[in-house]
Length: 378
Image 1 (cartoon, rainbow, N blue to C red):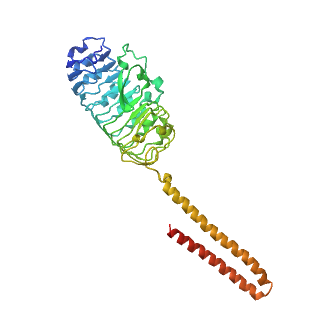
Image 2 (cartoon, helix red, strand yellow; image 1 turned 90 degrees about the horizontal axis):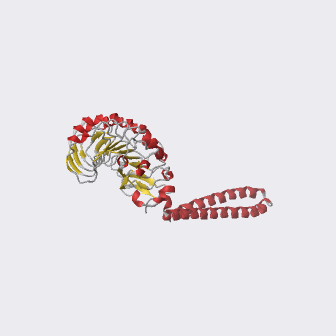
Image 3 (cartoon, rainbow, N blue to C red; image 1 turned 90 degrees about the vertical axis):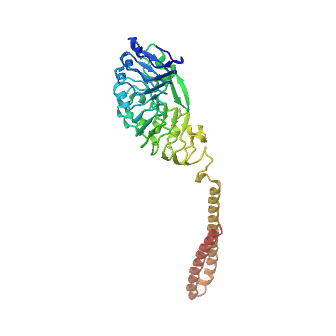
């Protein structure tokens, strides 16, 4: 049953469950208000529920737990409030799409989300979730597979409604229909999530979109980020990430959108490979980064410092050349004088070696004095 985008007003009628064979219910993009009727939980054959983009509010009725066959649950852009994710993860184990975006849901993300082994799209953005991102997300098995194989195209829904979803990717809203099978997405942006970057996420190698922006996530980005070879869009902006940008990141050859701005990164940007396709906007903010594409040069790229190093080397070469020329000239003269001295008198021989010792000491003192004066003049 599809009534999306029809400017419907009022509340969802309690008689909505009168059709016992109801498999798809799409009431999205209307002006419906009020709460979800408890009677909706009696539509136990329902597989796809779209109530997105309305003015619905309140808690989700517990009767929805009867809809154990749901593949798609799209409640985004309403004013629902609850701490419901624990039972969603425990009951809707067949979910392929879970969209709770832009509501008033709160609490911690429960470990039960890991039960959603068929999950293809997880969008919990713009809510009030707190705490750490559960390490159990690594158990979202469908997201760890090739994106061409993980979407169950044999879902028993004849309508195309269950294959329609708006996904925020590459910084913009895109509606996917028949190509939805190519999107594997986690969007937890704009919440109050904290703690460390969830390294387990890098094992979800089928991910195409990852958005953790506008949270309070700390620590460094792990080098294992390069395992997400199918990533097309990565947004980690406006967090508390620090350290250097992983040197492995340029190997993400499918990455078309990157936003690392407003973090605490430092060091040189690994501006090679795929990273050369991004502009300064991907790195701006309170960063201590340097190198292309930023105008801030790294120390080893500063032409003035390079020139100073060249001058230091040239100055050192001049000192060495002067010293070795002096030593060479002294020994040539010494050989000539030695012959005359040794050929005349033995006492003069002793005098000769004393003279050689004094000459060498004089040359060494001269080189040291020249070096000190040269450095003071720089």
